[in-house]
Every structure is written in structure tokens, then in C-alpha cells.
Length: 447
Ligand code: MLT
Ligand code: ZN
Image (cartoon, rainbow, N blue to C red; front, side, top):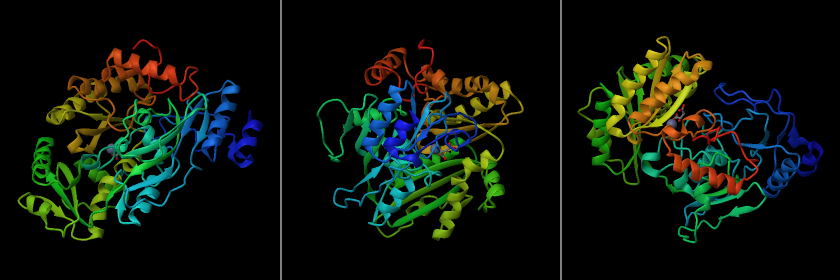
């Protein structure tokens, strides 16, 4: 197999994965192993690599920047790793269409920079922008801080090319805004976590880069208080991009780990940002002027400092040990009760474990990080947090995906009929289970 793969991609792009950064996930929770990492340089090479891998009875995990948080992109069962990072082409944006063609291996940040160079913006944004790749963000339907205004990755994908398990290629790269010609194969690939096809390229929607931005941090007494602020600003302004919720503990930790400055102390922090094409009129600052405490970013440096307190949450939490990460959505009205129920359930299971919550307040999307947990005992913590999600009618994955971390809990968010449909789709597109066979769908077939 190795010599066949080398003949396709070249000697430099096939190697033994043992001890490489391709086998473990970013958090250190999911540690895998593989004897083969292969890096194709084109869609044709992806197809040829798949043919060889199949012929040798092996299976594949597609991998981008390896920034996933649910173990969906690492070879936990010794799968061949297909790294797409060489497909990092970033095209010249089409300004009239507000679109850009990119390879699956381009980073989110590279796409953001290409868009900014022509006065446009790629609105998907999150802390790992410098490493996360477009293919991975499509495969997981990644969210981030601007979903409130622009939607998650799925909403940006106006064209896509993917290689299926049998080597056939689905390609809708014309970037057509309207195309009602049957099943939405492009949409099917979004959030499919490498189980239905290997994404090689995409055409992404860009939005205007509004010049005038307002960034304000507000101190809140409770989750409900923060939610009232979000409801008020979103009701009064159509220009809100982000509304990010953090706790005192999270902000203190970031301040300590990265040496950042806290503008004030509060139980809960809400970071709100708006952007418009008109001269900044202080709308956000005016809407929030009666709040106390409040910090208004009056310079790009100040804005960056406020965002640093949010962006550095994930890496700062990781300094406390390997966290169990739960990425959930609950109905907005239940956010406050969910936070207290989840905390109570976690401490009932293990009084020593610590919970740090942060997230995207306007989406009802909370990141519940459990620290100090014995990772072997994760089922008890899963049951505590995901059980609470289910009681409030929420989703066990808002934007990170299912991966291996939550596959056995899929029934909490999807009905048996829905899971059966997903299995049927998987069987139709990948009957031999060659593509990432160990993620997303429950293992035992019972759900
Ligand atoms: C975030 O919003 O920062 C990400 O989803 C990452 C995380 O949950 O740690
Ligand atoms: Zn997030």
C-alpha cells in the first residue's frame, strides 16, 4: 500500500504517523495511532488514494487542521489519516458575486485575509482560525462567534466538491445562488464529519466588511440578566454580530494565563459586538450606557484586549488539564436553569470536578467544560451534562459535531427514525464503511 500511495502523491507525502501530531487531538483527550499519513495534493489524488486504501482493505479518517474537539478527525482505531492540508489554495474573491473559491486545506484565517484584502469578510470566526481548515469546518458545520448574524458554516457554502467512497465526485462549484435540481448533496456534506465524502474544495459566501464596529463588554449579575441585555440589544439593533457569555472564573483564568487585563469584575461577562457600514453612531454604547459595569472599546487595541479575554478561553482552560468538553444548545429561556442543573448534576457525580461555562449567548449555545474529571469516568459526566440538555429539549452538539465523544448519546437529540435515515444514507454512499467509520452514528446499531 505504501508504495502505491507514494506513486500517487510522492515520497514526501506518505509517512508513518506514529508519534506525529496527526494521531492525537488538540485537547489530548483522544489519542490514536496510525502507520500511514498520506497527503494528496489534488482532487484526483484524493480519489486515487481512496482507491488504493480500499484495495488494501483499510479505512480512512480525513483530517484538516486537527482542531476538532470531539475526536472525529484522529485515527483512534488505526485508520489511514488522509491529511488535506496541501489543498490550501485560496482563490481571488469574486467581488461582484461576493464569493471565494478555496481548497479544503486553506485555513479560516487565510480565507478571512483574502476577503479583507478586497473589502469583504468571511464571517465564520473562532479562536482556532489560524489552524482550522475550511474542509474541517464544513465537515463539522462549525459555528463560532458570528452565527447570530451570519449563520454557521453551512450557510456560507455556496459550492462544494467532494470525493465519495467509490471514487465518484460530487461537484457544485458554480456558486449558483439558486439551484433547485433535486437533493441537496452539498448540504448533505455539511456536518457529515467525513463519513459521506472527502471535501476537497468549496465556494464560500462573503459578506461586506463593515468599517464601523462597536465592541462593548457588560457585567451581568446572572445568566437571565445577560439574556435580558441580549434581547434588548438584538431587539434595538439589526447590526449585532456577536454576544458572547463568560463567567468570572473563566475571565479570571484567562487573565491569569495570558496576562490579560480585566476591565472590571463581574459574576458574568457579556461581550457584544456590532458592525455597520455607516459612521459609528454609538448605538451599542448608547443602548448600554445605563449598564454598570460596562467597558466600551474606544480603539482597535482596546477591542483586541476585550476579545482576547474571550478568544483565549479554550487554551486557558486546557492549562488546567484535559477537559471534558460539552458543546450544547438549549432554548434561550432555559439557559439559566440548564447552567444550574448541569452544575448540580456534575457535582453530584463528582464534587471535586470543576465546571467552566462560556458560549454564544444569543444562540443558546453553551460550552460546558468539566475540569479535573477522571477521563475514564466520562460516561457519568456525559450523563450529568447531556441528560440536563435533553431534559430542557436541547441539542447535544451545537457546533462541534458528534465525533466519537457523543456518538453513544445521539439518541438524546435524534429520534430512532432519524438515526435510521442517517444509517441508510451512510450505507448508500459508503456501503463498505471506508470513510471515518467510527464516528457520528452509534456503534452498536441499536439506536
Ligand atoms: C469556542 O466558542 O471558543 C469554541 O467552540 C471552542 C470551545 O468550545 O472550546
Ligand atoms: Zn463555540
